[in-house]
Image (tube, rainbow over all chains, first blue to last red; front, side):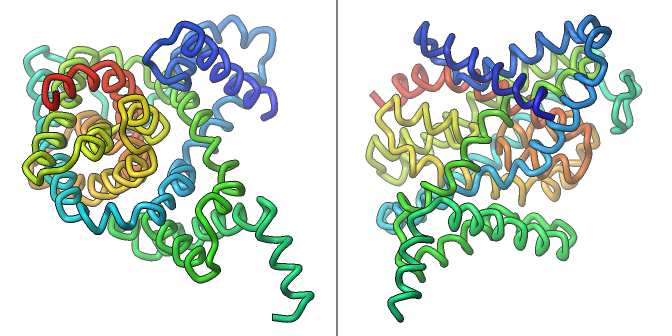
Length: 135
Length: 240
């Protein structure tokens, strides 16, 4: 668990250093995600020398992602500082947010399904049924 | 309050320990409530926890800055969690690669829709520029969206709240909406909610279906990337 946590934090660190060093407009953790993806693609080779690496990384990431909601609480509690802004613009903001989210969900899902049919990569062809892929 | 009780309170309110316990405790209770209601989206654990913590802060007359001193340890984990999204992405790489074309199309169309519709609607309510900028990245995961808002002259704390609300609204809407639209493709359903409602939507998608959750996580990561690049251009075009 310590090894996998170190790997994840190291990827984030490298991501932050590159993003800040070059002044890229991309968030550091997002670049870190791409770096970890590259590391995982090389995992076949790593696994031979350090067999427990892969399994530990899987369980650490499951632990982090299973309680993703928890991680949003501290920033969200910041609402207590902005009650005045919410009182002034709250109704408009909520209306804009609800309608925009609705439109975004519909447009995204329709685009995905339409292009999926056109490009011949629909679910039926893929043969996936919502089950996890077995490696 | 007696002197001893008072000095105990002074100690507790100065260390991160108390507010860390309050944050985790609120989440554990909210998660149990959500479970008891069969994961009904209106019992969103984030929404319930935030209301509970806000009430505790109000009752104890504690400032947000003091609370955040403790809660920042939880907040920090957002970064590693974003990095860890690479793991489900890698595990599902074959399904993902097969869907690369619809994903790219839905990503660009959805990302632009999310920004343009939010800013256009907010302008109808005559909101000042700083609030428009704070609303624009509402569909992006919190650490990224807050960074975008700050860079462009918005208010990151307001953005955090709007992002949270967008997450809850999307999670509440997605299952009935997708059923009404007769969408059966779990990849498309997950991708839409991850793009529109970031991590909270992704958490919801994982509760419903693991393939949907995987695509939601991918959409969240990609949308953070695309919005960070597109939003300055769209804002310039729409606001200035």
